[in-house]
Image (cartoon, rainbow, N blue to C red; front, side, top):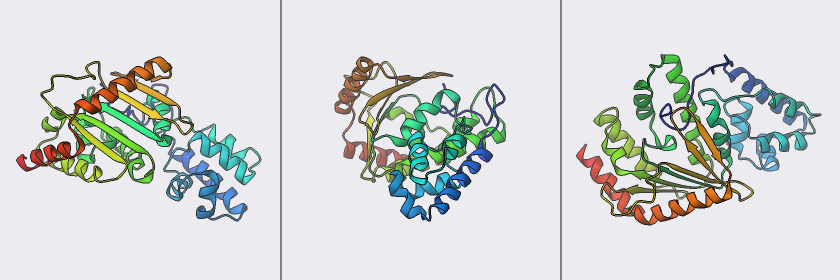
Length: 284
């Protein structure tokens, strides 16, 4: 299994690739300089590149990896002489994310719809910091403190999507046994359930629990991830122990969509799922 699912890797890869925090900050400064040169505030610039003001601010502060569409639009809007595109070429990785997960993380950050079925661990976007820390602390070979902190930072940054992209439709189907495992202990589990219940109140998030006992289950072949891109293309993603693969074959993606749709009917409805979580919360 991956480092807690969702492809979190170390601050450096097998090839000794450096942490990109400085290059991200440098890229952000380049964008800010050209934006100010164009006499635009972040509030004026954001709609021109079709991203939210918080996203623009995060990129300029070096806290978010710029999506390719942002780079292209910023270059055109700011008439940056190719400088922004040139600076983006040096942003080769995201700290805390495994190399094979970065492409999906980029798609995830721009998705119109994101569907996730998970049977191994609570999906990364729904995890609490304490739950994620418990996962990373159980990682083998053991991780150092700095490695764990890099993974936690990457996970926290990804989770901002749930609140910063209110127009993205998120659907999660999660196996009941994952909440009953009590990873990290009762206190961690209690906080996790509270957190998931809070997220489920958001209009753009739908959470369903797949019950322990079920006479039908379309997801027996493993986790499923699907995303709808801004140009309405559907893609899938498959993740293994130390690898991940983007699924672009339309026939395979269609098959995954069919399975996910069936699981939506097999899992507990939203309100019953939340009621079950509240019952589990009370028993902790």
